[in-house]
Image (cartoon, rainbow, N blue to C red; front, top):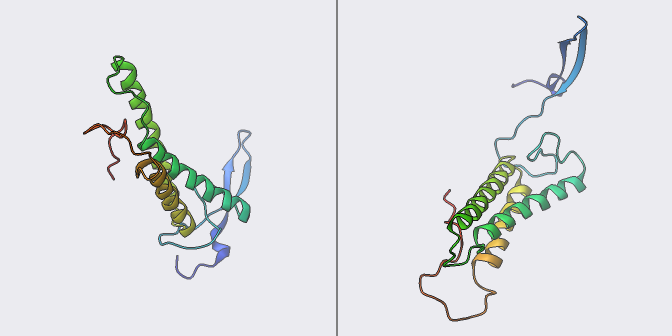
Length: 159
């Protein structure tokens, strides 16, 4: 792609129509970054999103932050009571939590794969604040703890 200018990145494509005619559509090809870059001109998760407006880029950063924050919240949640006699229900709850956590974690990963520095920092900040609030026990009141007690319904994420 060396030596190509912006004119070569836009093209016209011919499509056959059902009545035997031809239809021309204009396609815009966006270069995918393979190294980190800064700026609000990025596509995050969906084609064309957040667009070119700075306000939409800020909204995208907030969404990535909240996704990462929720991954940590779910990872350290405790919805199933110890000693529950409803093993099937407890297993279904754990399975649904796991599926939700993995799905959200993949969305964060795909957002980071936009290679935008702001998105990366938003994801790290979301994971960090989520861990501080849910996983570090900084804000927990000291109480009589049970040795070897589970701190979460889910096993730790393995990356």
